[in-house]
Length: 173
Image 1 (cartoon, one colour):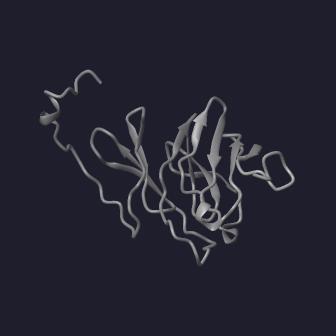
Image 2 (image 1 turned 120 degrees about the vertical axis):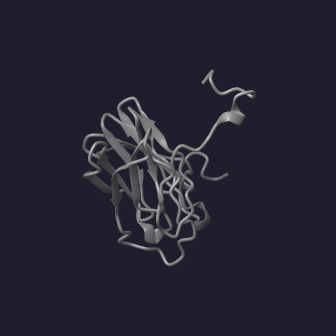
């Protein structure tokens, strides 16, 4: 971090680029772990690149199996990496774990109903021994929540509702 300063930033140059096909805007921030750059492309696509050369190591593609006809944000804003696994959410509400070395799917867990207006467009967080995932879809008037999952199995560990029901504390506000 000390190498890039206001004086040296003008010396930066692109070293490589890679095509990411699809009809969605790239909104994800890449994550680099042990020389491998992981990034989400169009919804359902995850890429692994050699960060030094730009060569694609693997690509994972998952076709959306349920589509809400009112879906309006077909984007993915990132992924998480922990213990040799890559985690990301899908527009049809699946949290997926991939093998970070091969791109092979390890598990997939449907966490909400896309026809109710939920999507998983945000990036999950890898925190200690949990994968934390929140929902998207507030424009559909859905009840917000944040979940924790076991990174090895995908088992839901807990769910915290950010919006109370009318009969819960704060639900009358």
